[in-house]
Image 1: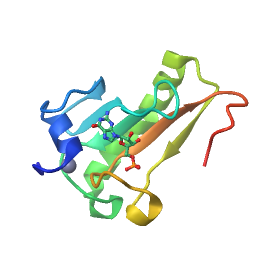
Image 2 (image 1 turned 90 degrees about the vertical axis):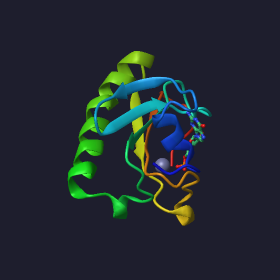
Image 3 (image 1 turned 120 degrees about the vertical axis):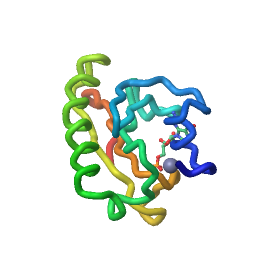
Length: 114
Ligand code: 5GP
Ligand code: ZN
């Protein structure tokens, strides 16, 4: 855990969040500033800054769980589709330096998207 990392503090329960999913290695929670209802962040519990830093087995856990959560989140908010994104590095818009995948529910004609 990194003491000055917001997401590590969320995993540790020091900062409240709305949990979507949790197991030994992966944590998913609602984004505090959602781009759409149900906007979910999927993270490794261990602190790694970038996708490039993730051990392969942990990357597999995160991506496997993200893939399984997409239809569940879609059903929960009756979405028509989903944008899945990782901002990898500050140049790509990564503001929190702990790897996280975004699950952003999409709706017909919502005008959003990358
Ligand atoms: P990034 O721009 O790094 O890809 O995305 C960071 C995301 O984390 C943003 O969508 C932002 O709303 C979310 N976020 C930042 N701080 C918190 C927090 O304390 N709690 C929650 N639930 N989400 C946060
Ligand atoms: Zn962290």
